[in-house]
Amino acid sequence: MKTPARFFPIALGLLTALIATFALPLQADDEVDLKALIEELRKLKAAATENNEQRNEDIIAELLAAASSERKAKELYVKAVKMVQFERAEKRSSDFRDWEDNRGTERNLDSEEYGVALRLQLRWLAISLRAATERDIGKLTGPMYEYMEDFFKGDKIISEARDPRAARRLINEPVDQSVFAKAFRLEETLKLQKENWEMVPSRIDSIFEKNILPFFRAMDDVDPLETAWNTRISAEKNRAEERETAEAKRQFTEVVYPRLLWERDIDLYKVERTNSRLSGLVSHIKKHILHAEAGKWIDDLTEVLEGDTSA
Image (cartoon, rainbow, N blue to C red; front, side, top):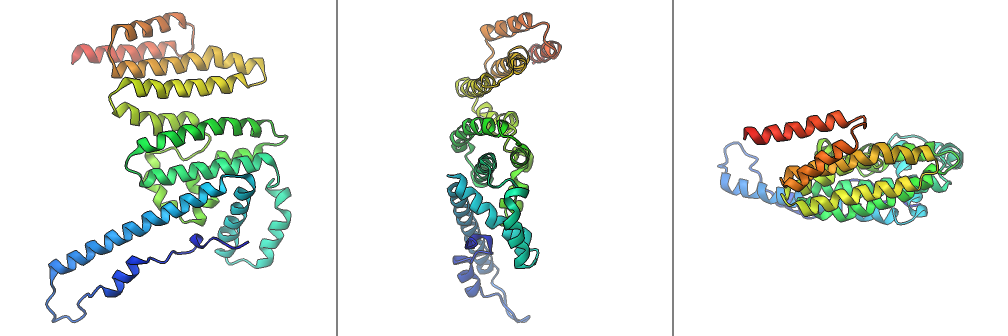
């Protein structure tokens, strides 16, 4: 299989042409036209930015194309491993062939769950790369919702596998540390947003908290925020209903579900202070007073009310 060209340094196109015509004075006695020099530098920066944006678009397209099927995901994985672990490490071709011959046993690459995990990793990497360059995060909420729906389906396949450990490691790995990110040299690009973005494909709670909810909170409109919360709760509820054990279902009903409802309702109350929402919060505490987090809920609500009275 041919190694994708984008694994190698990309020709800079317009940037290269500009550099060729960029006339920096080489003689110490020459007079420097600073205004012209600054203008040339601005052109260089614009060209570099345009080149980088196009490169990212090309990579996103390739990642999503590979994520469209297990076969394509596995093919790109093999190419990435060859590039990162063998060619860049300057190992012998025979070393890669040995790895390729044994990969089905060593990496579970031939299993369905491994293919599912690779597709999830590729999709979350594509979304994360888009987020690193997209100023309007609102454009990503749709793809993130779609990803999470597919994640729950994929997670079920992985959980039901005879030995899910290898696949589970993939979806628990931050995408900026994945072999795909290394192959495309995306570490520095993704590093820019790492503190404010969840990189682990399996951390659905954190994806909501870090990547989705802040956008809707900033809108200062309760309806989209409530929709986001209800989408999250519905997804978790559907996931819980598919669990096989009675204990897992009980855990969700008695522990997780009340916590999610509280987190939603206190979040909505912070945006829209109404008596009906306040009454609902108090009723929730009374209904679930034996919940392990009831004391924390009381503290949270008290803090919000005290802030209102001191304002």
